[in-house]
Structure formats: C-alpha cells, structure tokens
Length: 475
Image (cartoon, rainbow, N blue to C red; front, side):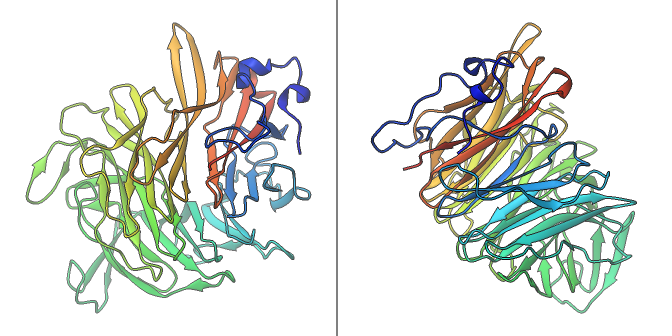
C-alpha cells in the first residue's frame, strides 16, 4: 500500500496543514465514518482536473486521471480494497497532444470498468472504452458513431451496475436551430411533426458484453424550465431533452447518470435560461435562471414517471439558482446533489428518491453543507455515492478572512431519506488557497458502505500536482 503523504514530499507542506491530524486505525472494527488508515499518494503528476473513481461491491476500485496536462492522455490505476495498488497503471487514452477532458468511470461487481471522455480534434467527440477484470481491453468506440450529421458530442457520463450493464449519456449537437422530423408516432406532443432542438442530451444502453441496446423511442414531457420536449426515433440513441422551446433559448449542462442494481437508471442535468425568465403556458412566473432536473428510466430505457425539478425559486435575484448536479443510485434509492446559489453564497443540497423515483423530500431539501462552496466556471464541486442504506456526499468548501481563503474537503454520510448520519467528516484542508489549492473531490462506495475519497493538490504555479486518496469505514 502506498505510504502517507508526509514521507512522500516532506517539507513541501506539513501534514498537519494539508490533512489535519491523521487518525490511526483502531485495533478493533472501525466505526462508521472512521478513516481506514492515513491518506495515500495516488500520483505525483497530473493537471488541475479532479481524479474520478469507481468502486465494486467487494471494495476494489479504480482511479482515472490525466498523468500530466489534459493533453497527456488518460491513465487508470486499479486498487485492492485496502488501498494497495493492483498492477501497473493502464493507458486508457494515449497521449496525442490534444485535450481529453470530461473523464467519467464506472465499475461492476466483477471489477470490469468503463471509461468515457471527450476528445477534441476538428470537433468534439464523445468516446468510451471497456476494460474487463481479466483479459485485454476492448478498443475505444465513438458514442455517436462516425455520423456526419452529428456536429459534436461531448461531456459523457457513464454508470454501470453490478452485473456489468451500463448506460452512457452525453451532449449531442447536430447543427444550429431546430431540426424538423416527420415520423408516425401518434402519442408525440406535436402529433407527427417532431422537433429536435440543438443541442440535446442523449443516451444509449449497453449490455455486459459492451453491445449497444436499442433502437428505441423516448418520449419527453413538457415541464417548467425546459419549456418543451420532443419525441425522436433514433436507431442508435434515445433523445432525452431538448434545449430550445417556444419561450426562449436554454443552455443544458453536461448530463450525469446513475444506475441501480436492477438496471433502472436516472439522468440529471442543469438548465440555464438565458433570458432569466422561465414560463409555463398556464402560469408565467419569474423564476430562478438556473435549476436542476432528474428523470428516472426503466432498465429498458422507458421514462418512469415525470421529471423532477429542483431549485426553482421565486424572486428577482438573477444570481439565485441551482447547478452542477451529481447523482447516485443504489438499493436504497437515488440521491441527487447540486449546488444551490443565493447571491454569492453557494451551498450543497440533496434530495432523496425511492427505488421507483418518487421524491422522499417534497418541500425541504437536505442542506448538506451550510458553508460556502467555491464556484469555478460550472465545474461540479460536490460528488455523491450510493451506500446500502443511503448515500455519502463529498464536497469542497471555502471560508475567507480578508484576502486569505481556506479550503476544506468534507464528507457527510446520509440515510435513505436524506437525513445526516453523524457529523461531517474533515478529509483535507488548505490554510491558504493562494499557495495550495484543493480540487473538488470524487467519492465512491462499496457494497458495505465503505467509501473512498480522492482529490488533487496544486501549489502556486501548479509546479507540484499531487493526487491523494483516503478510505473510510461505512459500517
């Protein structure tokens, strides 16, 4: 197992400043939330992007990151449940000199995993690659194929259940304006005349062998904030959401997806209405300019119920809203977290859903972090993982004293109804973000609720970039 950070870069920054006091593992079984050993070094090179992590039910996990800049390719490192490395680093994407952002990873119960990313050449293209636990990896495949009708595909998000089935959602653009289709689908909102707005969020399902499942038809329903939806028959993907409706142009964020044990899955996204006004045909209202939505789906890709919209607020504050969702789905249901904005204050909120997608909090969402979270250009600052009895949320927060900003990475365990289980857990801190910056964390959980948190530290000038992980007991 990798050693603690004090031995890795003594003198660069004190262990007490970076991680706080390291708690030794007790000789008896650890209590829920206790650390399972000190933080360990994952890599001594990288970029300012966060590492992404996925974990299997037996505790094995994989960390995916850039070994240098975002143009240096992508590597994956397997770990055993105790945090020791499992083999050498795996090249996911060879270095090519072009940026490879938007990393996403998911793992099944056997240790197979899938990595998805965006590649930039003349256009953005979304890709994925499947890595079996035993044997050679398959080739990378382009999610949208090589269709010349697709202008760009980007920001993929992959989710995988224990049996190996997985789903990938991404942003697709086919051109400017509204495209018209005429297809014989009598239950579409616009009769036989279909509108596919650009861009759109699309997804595709895959079986455990990595074979795409479909074709299929997705019916999207109208709702406040998204203004209008569409129906589309597509032989490769299912259209989920469009970005333009009769009341003005909206901007869709990158989608995030999660899948449950039985194959049901959820897709969440954020919407920004450029004009700041979100109206419904029956009830015009001045609402928050940004908000978050989630739509559950069956294992066969059919919508389960209606979309749920979070973060709609009345008022004239143009800075109020919700953004940057993350979602996790497990045996206890689904947990959705997002960043809620009020003026220049950002907090992390959570809403829990049961196993069929019905919200368990109808009025008040759980405020996971009452501290200010640090907004950085739309990047999500919180992450969530499903546990057998609820979820665990990790986030980066900041506090300021004059020109000095202190950053913290914290974790909160929650039960299936969204209530806090114990106090927040301090994972890492920086006394001065001007000299040592912490990236937002990633978190993943195993079948026992044990969880792993990963983050990267960057010194001034980013001449020293270090990625760390730490394991915690969940039961």
